[in-house]
Amino acid sequence: MSETIKIFHGPQHPGVTGNMSLELDLDGETIVKAKTHVGYLHRGFEKLIERRTVIQAFTIVCRICVPEPDPNEENFARGVEELLGLEISERAQFIRVMILELARLQSHLLWLAGQGASIGHEVVPQWAVGERDYILDLFEEITGGRVYHMYIYPGGVKRDLPDGLLERLLVLLDRLEARLPEYDRIFFDNAGVKKRLQKVGVVDPEEAIRNGYSGPVIRACGIDRDVRRDAPYLVYDQLAFDVPTESDGDAYARALVRRAEMVQSIRLLRQVADRLPAGEVQCKLPRHRQLKLPRAETYVQTESARGAFGYFMAGDGTPYLRRLQVRGPSIVHAFTLLEDLLVGAQLSDVALIMTSLGICPPEIER
Image 1 (cartoon, rainbow, N blue to C red):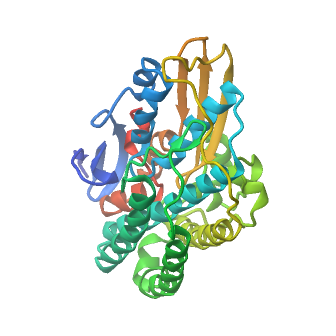
Image 2 (cartoon, rainbow, N blue to C red):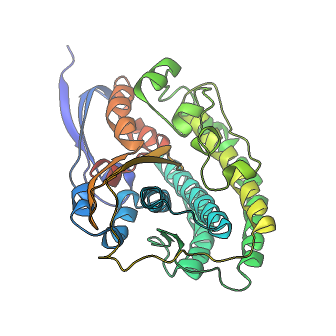
């Protein structure tokens, strides 16, 4: 007769798999029950933002998802703009797309590093983190920050691009494009990687729709959804890109979707570099305590590397938001989905499955 034992996976730092705690009941190496515990990171962002003026609150939103802060900045800025009735310049919109697609690329490279580490493939993390640093160099040049940028700002962006930035961007894209076949050779086409990822963490398409999954998780089930195309914002409707899908719904399918999305991000960035118009990058705004939001509500969405981020924002005639609520992909991916997928999985697959879902624990604790 087997005896069930209980262990805790996390919390410890760094990394996605160590920022939250999983309470696991094991029968040998097989998980029979999993329960997620959160609250070990930053907390209460929504209420912190409601107690600050719009401009003061702007510095908080990027903390909602540390590995990919820019979609949160874009959602917050666009929500404020919709409440105020502001229309930003076309140049600012193109620059925002550039920032968002660079953010997607660096996020997918960080995922690749984590996915490799989760199965003991030590070459991939070294390569992917190294490649990501070149993108962070560009972020530092554009925004002054490598991780938190605070650059996509209500009314446009904080400042124009540095001289020669587009040329350096194209050099970076050439480098990344040349490296992708190498990642195929050592990771995506690797028989050992396939053995670890295929048929692991399989998501049912009907469940994905019913529970509101998004991003690579739902696209790996064969469901063709992407906010950039389905509810276009900025200038995405002026740019050509495909929405990659796979049909198996497992960890390997999610890996292939992200691999294909990197190609599409490079494609989008080349179009931005080729078509970036001249013009101003920032509307004139009142001083932060004179910037009053009307009594109105809005809901805006941005497609992040992890899935759809939505912001509900309500003003009440003061410099403060009456209500802010964030709907991110991680809360359903980490609770509804992760707890189900872990049942019947092996202990050695816990980090693998968590990483494949693109979970961002700070977003859950917002």
